[in-house]
Length: 103
Image (cartoon, rainbow, N blue to C red; front, side, top):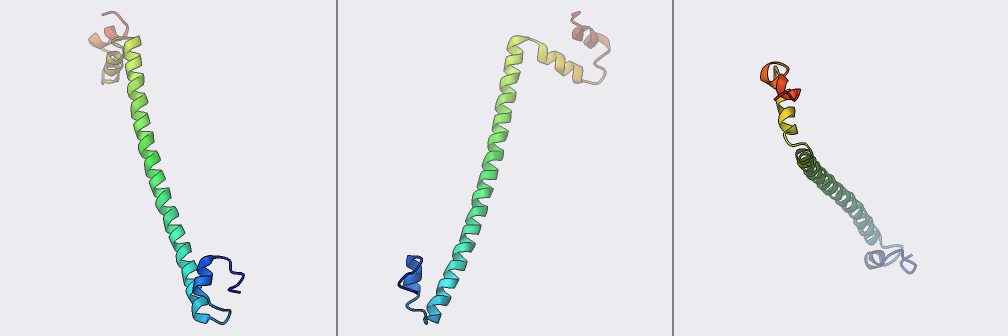
């Protein structure tokens, strides 16, 4: 079996079909390789999740700021009206006049 081996590590660890110690060493090597790949996949996935979340947050902030700037440039005073409307009692007094464009 060592002559037609699947990979180089097998031929290094297993000298013959009767090399029980070498076969066990190869089995342990394969198990560790699988565990390493699983851990590496988890690390990569964690990194990608964190990177995507960070980038999404940054993009959200960027486009929110950009939209606010565009609105302010297109309609000066518009953000002030929105702010005043969001306060309790916005429909009364001077605020109602401001909202309706009377001031």
